[in-house]
Image (cartoon, rainbow, N blue to C red; front, side, top):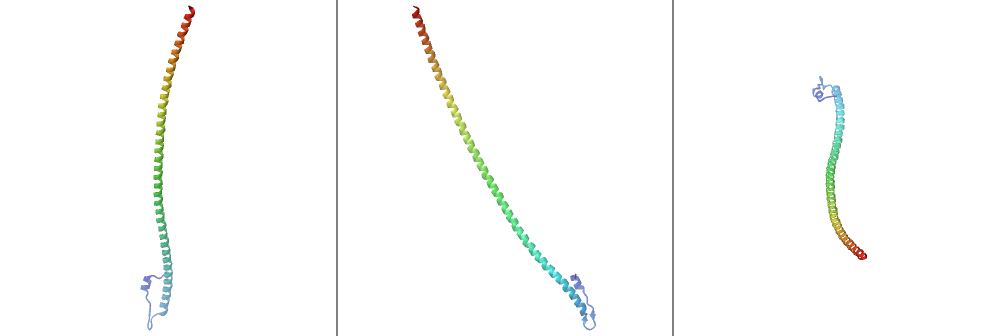
Length: 152
């Protein structure tokens, strides 16, 4: 392959009458044309390859931006979903605690009512027992009196 230095340093031998040797100049130009054609073809192919790679790079950058945007949106959505779920969980816990507290309060009230009812039943039983005792005592007295009357 001919280099730019080869071209610069190329010396043609001079002929006495006509100047440079036509055959040497033609051979050199043929070599130069061949190398230049190869270089031109290679340069064209490389430019096409660079253009293709540039387009691919731009395509991949677009995909990367889209993926980053999608990832950020997914993270934001996940945070939103997590936040909403936490709020719902907190609300459910709050409602459950309120319901449990209400049921506990209702049970306490029911226990108080049952204790009062039990005390009332005990009082009625004590009253009934006292009446029965009184009745039995009076019946015993009556029997004693009947027995006294029969003995006489």
